[in-house]
Length: 215
Image (cartoon, rainbow, N blue to C red; front, side, top):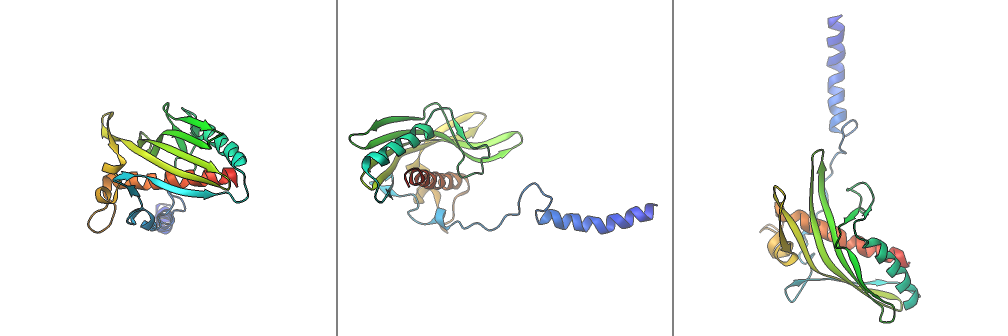
């Protein structure tokens, strides 16, 4: 009987190990080599006069200023509601968790100006007994006119975990710019590189949400 069990194990174990290495029975999917160029490109964190400022124009062909404003204002009121969370999986691009300082500061239909105060968690990873994350703070100015939304995100900073519940506030200028975040080879530095990646993802996601709300 022992010989039969040993023979079965001898056949089964290599197959189980191969399946696990391929992600078939493992908890984590097999990791491919990610394209990091979007994060390591020079100027991926844009600067103006020494300040980190993300600017873009989101097109809405054929849409009136009033129509665009109403839709973006509705999006902003939901997106920046304090103490709210969207999604239940931190790996989702749509996931975010606002903290109490998040709010819409201004929504002026006549001028077409919407100003949002972002205050949210950016989550790097979650383990059974720990969550690796930062709190990001920023201002988002949206200027709306016929056929477009002018996007500007600025005054960005982070609470950086120092361990044992201690955080220090770091500005984007001192933490995620090319000078501070890229080494001599052009690769991301280990500690602050993840902040740069999450910031770029967040900005792209915000622009995508605005575009989807009006088109």
